[in-house]
Amino acid sequence: MHELPVEPGVVERVASAMATVPRPGFLPPSVRHLAGADLPVGIGWDATCSQPSTVARMLVLLDARAGHRVLDVGSGSGWTTAILATLGAAVTGVELVPQLVEMGRAHLRDAGVDAAIEQAAPGVLGLPSLAPFDRILVSADLGRMPDALVDQLAPGGRLVAPVAGSMVVVDVVDGSPEVRIDGTGYAFVPLRD
Image 1: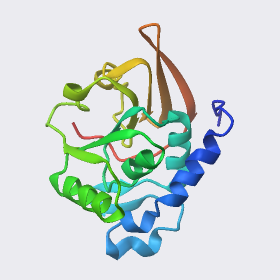
Image 2 (image 1 turned 60 degrees about the vertical axis):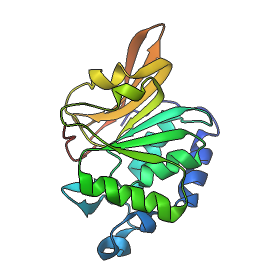
Image 3 (image 1 turned 90 degrees about the vertical axis):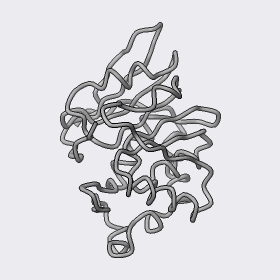
Image 4 (image 1 turned 135 degrees about the vertical axis):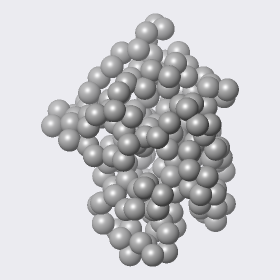
């Protein structure tokens, strides 16, 4: 698998943030015993908490930094939302399933994380009313390039998303999206819109 280069120190920053936000607190009690496994874990409503190694790679590629406005699409249990906040980003999660919105909000509150999770509007990708964002993370596979999300990026912004089994990185450079592929063979639940 071809991996894109990342700036030195990003891997360490992401690892430190992930260590600060323990996964068990973002899983339903019935599956917390699986928190240490490098596997996606079902959290209900046909959603999963992605495997830690994949989350780490996505966050390294995203390279969210202090001061960035970040959108976490498909926030699920709130784990990635919390990690992004720990990286210093002003993060808003968005989730379609009302029960997951409530779960994610409760997990963030219990962990003392300052971040929000908003209810997604059916048929609307992301949160266009709050755009633009410096970074957008998508934790479900849309199956096609998420142009509606790319349009929500600020100049110089970046989106990381699984698209049809590949990990796609989109950077907005001089007003145009530049697309790179980090690797293939990723399996995510489909993004519902």
